[in-house]
Image 1 (cartoon, one colour):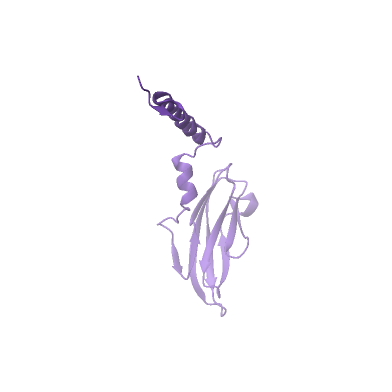
Image 2: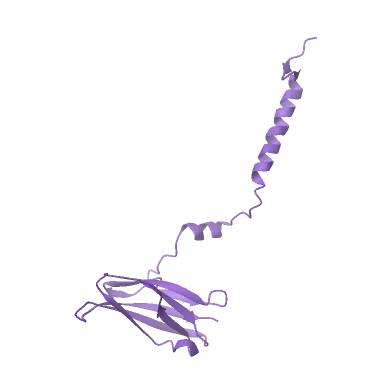
Length: 148
């Protein structure tokens, strides 16, 4: 009786050896030690927060995002103000500062920081763009909710 050989072994033993090797290789590849991402984590990482379609702006200024909700886990938020580089941006709000609902301060460049105040509630910050002659070129509103 003749036996087919593979790597010096009977053919069936060779097939079994290759099958076990492939299975172990597949298992070792999936054990990366990293926690798999959920679909929510993946979508947040790939897609930035888009501004609300209900954002209000008039003229040559936009605020992104146009609404923020502050919470215990996220007591601050950063918003970006987009306008012509020759315009000056000012901010006015009815938030009451640190002892009120929130504070709004300019960070760097077009970024502004919104920080939770001592009181819960809602308020609005209005950003105004003016040109070098002091003429208003546009306004945009930021809706702030503090749940801290």
